Image (cartoon, rainbow, N blue to C red):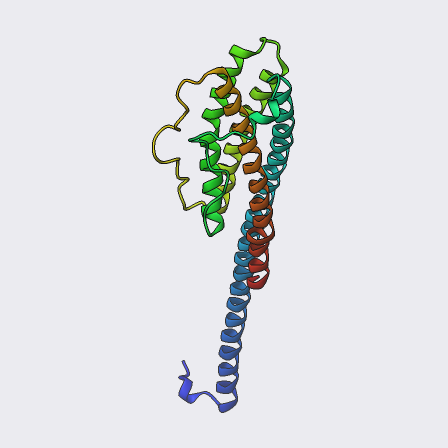
Length: 236
């Protein structure tokens, strides 16, 4: 067998050229494969990001839609409430009642504001129950007021669930804080006049709260979800 040293120069150069070509082809194949893997990884990331953006938008739109509906129904409910309270019904809503949930929404960033909305909703629900119980003693069982009170209370529970779901979609790594401080404080036994004032003040305060909820959610719609889309466009 002829050793590489004894091969003619031309043949040695050809062998070297063949080895060089094989290595080059290997590197080109490896580079192509790596490029395909990178493209697949980026596409996968973009798909996940787009899915999260869609979840952000869809959850927010559902929440906004239900908020508007409850706000409209609460406005109608106040009118019905006044209609069934007899004389001086307009004065009942001008009264003052202690221990009513604060309609203002606290917090600096979106996560804190959403938690504040969820917490306030949870605090209003026991008051709706108390107003309903009081009005069952003052109204006929077939009164439209009782039906409307039930509807607003049920929709408010659904709204609280939507707010919670929306929060979890935006901040999956953060727990949803439950209202602190134990059960909601309800008023002590009241006479009929006090009950009528209490009911109207609760409904009026809740209507104001829902208006603030709509403003906060619309602001989040224009910042948080949109910022996610812009960031994904920047990186991908």
